[in-house]
Length: 196
Image (cartoon, rainbow, N blue to C red; front, top):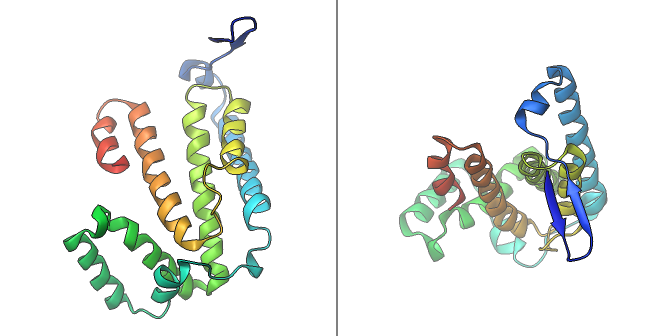
């Protein structure tokens, strides 16, 4: 039980432990997780991608994502080798992820597929926020944390493909690292290189 206080008002927040959750049947936990994933996916779609078929390339999308649409697999591999050899601005994945988004999206169906991948990426990050919050909060509070991540973003450029790859890509690695850290044990060894 966590107790929050602002000096006058005390709020007790019940915290579920793994043992308490283990009492639920596996199917019920599975259904609960699927329902949470569905709610988060709908929140992402409605809040950010409902009109994705009308989206286009914007600002830096032209140099990072659109420029990689016509590349071959050999070209993408050559860029990846270059990025990991010369480390542009110290972040090779920062340059590689937009190229991969453009390359894969173009092969899956063009601009609409790129935005579908962007939406899926944001759903994954929202799910990771939910999973991290679920470690210390009740299910409804964890779901609220995930929806809050979608509805009140620190970054409001979610529809720019380059920012999906840059910012959401960095968030994916940070969230996975945090999830591994929370797991403890040997997983913590991998948390630093993944989040870093």
